[in-house]
Image (cartoon, rainbow, N blue to C red; front, top):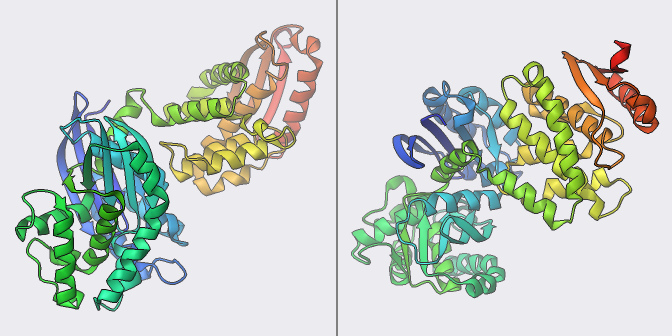
Length: 500
């Protein structure tokens, strides 16, 4: 595992970057940058990012890119959260941003965001008193997690944050009791469905993470309302001060930075609703959050402790797949991959191999719905499941491999992944299809494939003598597969060894 790692969190309020060194599984921060971009406030009524706000964000990422562009792809992870999940022109932004950063951006789900937040917090909290409640109020969403040690047990991501709540209820800057009550009721409605399951699971410590929680703590300490952390009394005092000020621009609280003034009202109201709904008395604040969680996740991937592999395994068990058959397909896929790796996957072999194995495991997941068109059912299930560790783009890639592992081919469905990733996806799909095809008999007997020879887009399979004659169904399937591939620019030939 390389010593230097980098994580960038493209949040709805702020962009954060940390560069760190890892020693014995611990993270030592060596560089940190943060800029308040307020991407969420730049969304118009059609959920498009305003050009001026987009340029501000790109200017920030140009500075970030100067620091991390030279790093290897395996040690950098950049994630986009709520606003980029929501923005209709996020693809345009990402294309420009990736050119500046020199690395791809992953859009993650709210649940994946919650998982990474918990990872960052759990590695930065000394106390281990059992269950922990972790709350992170971001610019566009709020994540609430209960976990124990390093494992999250219950996670939710709610569409309310300091930016969108401030924009929704206090856009003109006026603060009135009626508006505060309306905003508080809105937050309580979002929380209501989750009160019972969280209360039943319970927790010993309540922990806040990220900018809103830290800002509230700084205000509370500076005003003398708490010695540390956040209390309900401090939240009530802050809201009373807001009402006395009457205008956001007139808020004057010690400990509040000027750059956060525009969004603090919405953040405090969300925090107070969480305190009331979950009956929290006191909350401590963690230094760890999403970006630290990204770094620990990178370390886990490098040390064969990849959350994505665990998600795939749990997904397969949940729907009672034929795991023995999946294992045979995996083994065949691995055999094929090993033979073509140098020619087809020299630069991204580790990641490509993982996707091939995951797709081989899940290729029949749709059978739990129906045999007819099961590959399409599997696509829908995989695309829409909460698979921990996967970004939206990565989950889409896995789902497409499952969708196209049989029957007709449409390689254009990979076009949105960019030239390099599209080429990787096409080649993985071909290997998966061959692995499935050669195990159609579903027997323990290994397919009689001796070797596969690759020359760019030309493939030649060499089988044991007489194997093709003894397996007429496989022979017919290979002929059909050659026809399918012909329309994609790839060619497939197959022979017995004695025919060469």
